[in-house]
Amino acid sequence: MLNENFLLVAALLLFVAVLAGKAAYRLGAPALLLFLGVGMLFGHYDWVSVDSPAAVEFAEFIGMIALCIILFSGGMDTKYADIRPIIAPGVVMATLGVTLTAVFVGSFIYFIAPHLGVEVPFPIALLLAATMSSTDSASVFSILRTKKQGLRQNLRPLLELESGSNDPMAYILTVMLVGIATGAEGMNWMTAFGTFVVQMVVGAALGYGFGRATVWIMNRINIRSNASLYSVLLLACAFFTYSFTTIAYGNGYLAVYIAGLVVGNLRIVYRNMLSTFFDSFTWLLQIVLFLILGLMVDIKELFNPDVYLMAFAIGAFMIFVARPVSTIICMAPFRQFSKRARVYASWVGLRGAVPIIFAIYTITHDVPHAEYIFSIVFLVTIISLMVQGTTVSGMANWLKLSYAEPQRTFKLTVPDHIRSEFSEIEVNEALLQNGDTLKDIRLPGHTLVVMVYRNEKYFVPKGLTQLLVGDKLLVVSDNNDEMLQKIKDMGIENVMKV
Image (cartoon, rainbow, N blue to C red; front, side, top):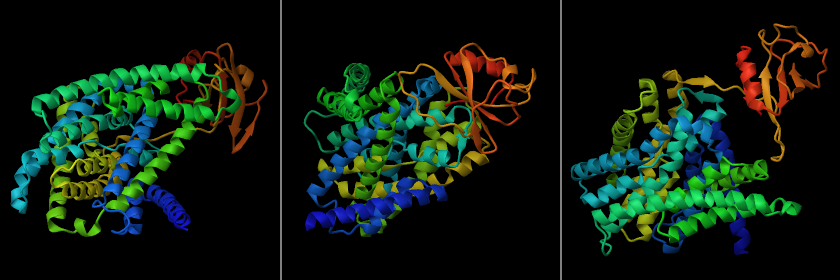
């Protein structure tokens, strides 16, 4: 009977969390905020507690699995062509930016603590700051996409690259500082720096290697008789990448992100099916993780003056000082960004589930004041989501950096072995300058218009079909780059790959 009750409660939690996620989109707030709220609403101190070693270890285990898949899936969704122009600033923000944030916030905590009646040693202050040094821009872009809002000056790929690659840096800092704070044998600042270099180099190398190996395995192993097993195979490759890299003293989180990036930018079989599976699985893991984290928190502890005064001070300093200063320093060498873009990048520094996971890591490793760290990190995360998360769209509009993204009219699932590519073109006067019928359009060779959308109806055109300004054309071409270039040369701007 216990198992049935557990499943009933779990199903109810998932159902309410999904509804909360839908409400979050409508309110313009990160879904994470309401997922945590659902966990806190249903939670009770006797269900899950930071004082329960088994519950804490289980939460850390779920966090490891979730973060592994979230990073791998994020890498798969990142197109190299999009991030290529902003790789340098993105990497600087994901490494130096995280370090600067940790140093600034750690120093602030160390100096402000005595004024709040709390004694925090400098290593613990740095550790507390390190757990909160990475950002969660994934929730930002779920808001922007829901509102059909794009960002100018390559801000979206910049912030996506930063959010996808800065978790490993924060993890390394947290692990090093946990060793220093607990007095681990042989651990000092020089040893910690050496560990950092080894983990980054090994993680990056093995991530790239395993990414290439994964593509080779996926394309060579023939299990087309049961194509669903390709999802299981790719999942196994992601977990193997993380675990083997960790055993080899590399950073597993960096490895799975780079492996996902490699897999996402090379041709593999059943890509569309795999992307759908990982997207759904990632959402499930995020919901479960956020619910567990919400269930774990002791609400009474959050209302302890020592906790909420420190949390509000840290949150304000991080939002208005540490993140902006770190961003300005990191983006200073890169002149392609305007002042408005730098301001927006500094504002979009949301804290998410990862800092809470790192805070759990301090509990499982018996760091002094670990429960205090967990409560502060949890409250700072909520503050960040409420202040920054609910203003992401408004800030982009205020800074005049947003634009309405064009929405695709045609949505197709094309098998990966088909080399031809589909594009959507909106008819304008330039396209009709030689005539208003389909046969009058001068398209490149090996290019066909296969469907027209007009007045909420779809139809297959013929050569004598008359076209109107505003019609949407579904075009297939064996040389998509040539076709797109000729279309642009004709003065047509609204072109999208399908």
